[in-house]
Length: 156
Image 1: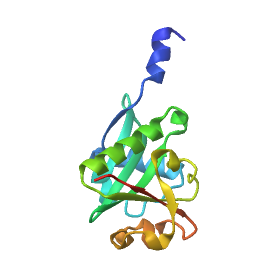
Image 2 (image 1 turned 45 degrees about the vertical axis):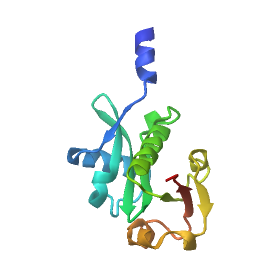
Image 3 (image 1 turned 180 degrees about the vertical axis):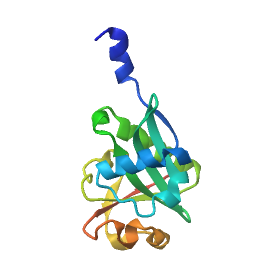
Image 4 (image 1 turned 120 degrees about the vertical axis):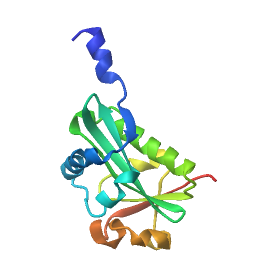
């Protein structure tokens, strides 16, 4: 592999707001990661995607409910694991949430409870979830009751 090709594969992906045409790629990523689709399409405007060339290699979303947000659907292609693509997506979601005036982000996870503390998320009891977030499909049953609930309080 030439040095030029090696550097091309280590460049970070471009993180951008999802477009309606990105839905099929988002569905593939979520399905490959065994993440729920319930409610996702209705919140496509809250998705960001990671692009490498013409390919979408990752996605994540924030669903807003009043001044709280639900971080959901963080998924990356298997070829992106270990390349900080997931971290870039989460960082973008956190930054966008701060800019939008969201006071806290909550997430549910069955497999990544050890991944999110690096961003400042802490495990909380489900009873501590803001009432407004209970409108989300994830909290209405798309995620199992056994999922770990985590929260990041954003500075105002």
